[in-house]
Image 1 (cartoon, each protein chain N blue to C red):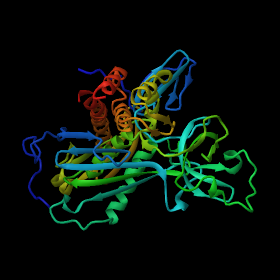
Image 2 (cartoon, one colour):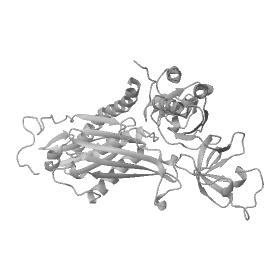
Image 3 (cartoon, rainbow over the protein chains, first blue to last red):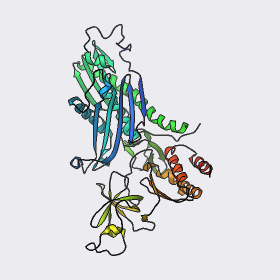
Image 4 (cartoon, rainbow over the protein chains, first blue to last red):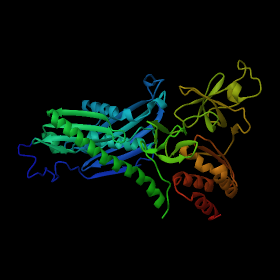
Length: 240
Length: 222
């Protein structure tokens, strides 16, 4: 949906947020009993559900690597996640996003501990309203940690956009369709290492550096939320 | 209010190394030790490690495991050990007697679906796993029920010096064998009660005062 009018009025965005404000974040760990680990993460209306299976034997067998384990990610938007029905299954965009999520997570996992086997991550978008790939990364990171996969650090991600020449955090669907640039950013906050930067559109060098700094600050906040969500799962068992 | 043990998460700092041994669930960076997994930290004067709260079974030499025969080869068996890796049980590691494989079909000893109690005898760098049955206690398990728990919680089911498992055995009068790989074999006695107790330990392994809670649970409705 293209919008001609201004997206930022009196310093407020279309959904009433300030430019450097993220939407309400909800995180829940351990929803799928069958999976080794699972998590659901929502940024406002955008909701991603991730399930981790493995480490387990992988087929077809030619994919196995005798030196290290492999990570496979399948990202998919469910048919009802958007206004107009999305035909189910993988399309060009899902394949690209699956690859991006995989490369954002790979540096954090000790894959060399699992020769000949693999870890499967399935991410489904239940509701899409912008920033689905970063929501998927956050959900996958939580699901991996809850599956007991050895990791260097949790991976946190956020999106930054340039709307009406202003840098905004955590862009939603309308902003996503009308922004001048959008940047997906993922990092391991504990190690201060960036694992993903992907940008569409145009930004000056100064703006890019500012956006990265903004992303780094936000990821630290999300890091605390992720830790909280993981701890909460075990505290809930204690309360029962 | 129930207390829980302090948890560490992946990437969280545990302690300075100071020349101590490291478990395989932690890693070192610039003299500092971080956790790889979500679990309960164990820090002593000799070693730093983390007991994970989730995860699959990774075979380790000398672990006593319960396996299920999966495939029969000419001179051995493939065993499902509840791990991403299958283990191989060679004929000479399974039997003491001489067997002429050109004349004998080895399914007469173990067939698909049989349950065995064995020891991991070899794990290579590329995780080729071999098991052996040449120790006291290794045998084919006949009858009974096998249940599966999270392998990382086996230590809690056994308890310090076997205290927890002995408690369950004593109260339910069941025969119980615990494999390090998370498979538990139970036969006789109050099987239902024993299973309930073990699953309760699995669910609440990070809670302080679990032994008392289990003891109370086993006393109830006897």
